Image 1: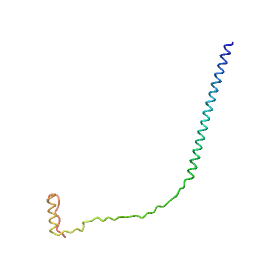
Image 2: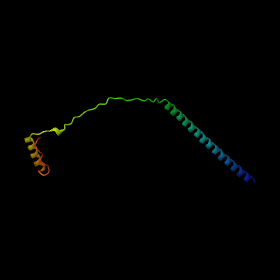
Image 3: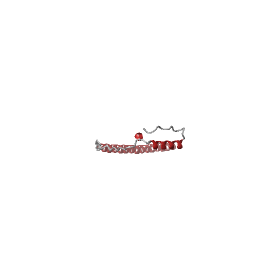
Image 4: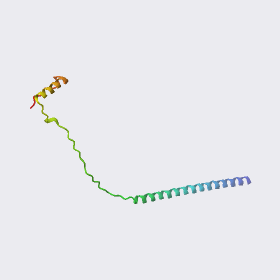
Length: 108
């Protein structure tokens, strides 16, 4: 019976050591969880305090509008003398061909 008692005692001590190791690991895990939770709460508190310190201001921005007027020449009132109009028509008929550009009337 002695060998069975020795084997049983060894088995019991091994189980106790394993269980004790589990309890140590569980304690380490619990400590890490508590530390992480504490850090998270500290970070949230710091963020909340920073948000409270923000000062919101509304401003109306008013500036003068600067407008630039650019005048472009319009040639609708351009008048040619009959000699100048003939010269223009001759130049147009030479460059584009007589059939492409219709002849214009005499000056008004």
